[in-house]
Length: 191
Image 1 (cartoon, rainbow, N blue to C red):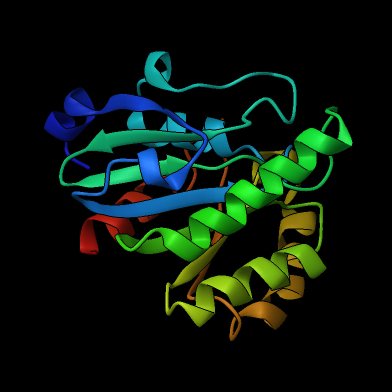
Image 2 (cartoon, rainbow, N blue to C red; image 1 turned 180 degrees about the horizontal axis):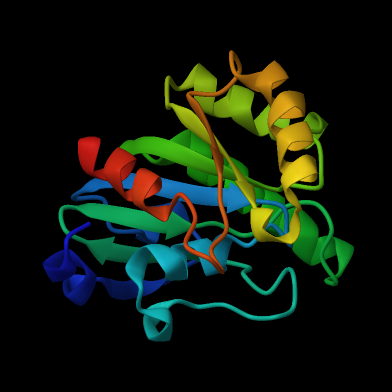
């Protein structure tokens, strides 16, 4: 994303149903567990935190937030897994994610975020398979790597090398320290 694109980045709206979402441009989505840091990563990409909808409380994103910059849409999906919300709301959020994956015809790539201290679980594998069925490349983005020391980072990279065949890329990031943000931007620009 160029400096010009950053200035052009804008929030288009929050959507509860795919039928109401804009669909004129190619789209990239970000999804992960409720505490994976999706909104923080989107904010780091734009380098304009004022337009990004985020909260300190996991599970706050309960709709799909769509942003536009350059010639693409970027979608920040609700988190899955743990969130301090009712079971009914969690189920609605899960339905929204599955509806999104199944019906977004303009979807070009997905970034599946995971806190670097967690492991790829059944939910991540299931979601990755849903994208794979649609032939949408999935990047596994390990977040919050700034919290690890050098030895822990080496161990993490070794552990996640087991998943290299499962994902298009495995990216080790820190939104707080802007680590690998440029790599993500370059991947998005290559689509």
